[in-house]
Length: 309
Image (cartoon, rainbow, N blue to C red; front, top):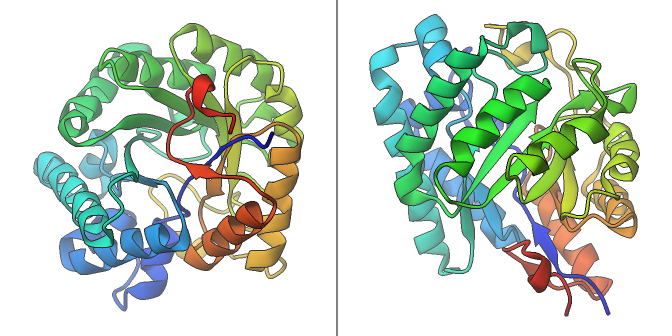
């Protein structure tokens, strides 16, 4: 019997950057939501059409810390409301009611920089704020791009309090997929968030090769696991408050190539796959076609009792 596969969408920030004609800003995708909300709806809709069964809210850069540094803190509630509206509009327009909307709990200050994570009390307070803003319109919470165990635990605990399913995605060292960007072992980090209530563990926003290594670290957890890689050559040039024009995309990750790599994760036991930065609707469409061609059914839920067909 083939396992059912939860197919997530791909990256939003880089996809919106490609679609927008406006200059890139440190607020990334949130700025596009303010200036050109129709692009956000269209991107969500294109991912659904490509086969995604789970779409992520476009609120990745709308944290209290990032808004204080790069924008206007008073826009916090407005941006989250806009993200919810865009996701629901896209799902409604697609006619695919089975598609689930994942709330996003991102790094509060910056991606890939564990040294920028605030103290525990601040993390707890602000992740609860994020959960409160999103809870009325999501089906699951996804704590993503977590680079430090303490950060991941704070996000997980805040999300678990909502009583929604919680998935946690770690970002790992691109040269060693067995460790977080903080240097902490991925396997231990995964066990910690599972003990805190996470129902699934993933690895995201790391190079595909590191995600492949990470799958072996997650295979013995006893919970669903998976990955969604980025398509950057390196994330090292991006500093807190910087803009994504500092990064370059790989030229060797065509949609079919990415699909074959992700199929390898599934052969290692993964049941949740998708894409992160620089992985767009064409990649998700190729992945969906590949999976269905191999006899996998695409679903929107990763409960253990829903993984076999």
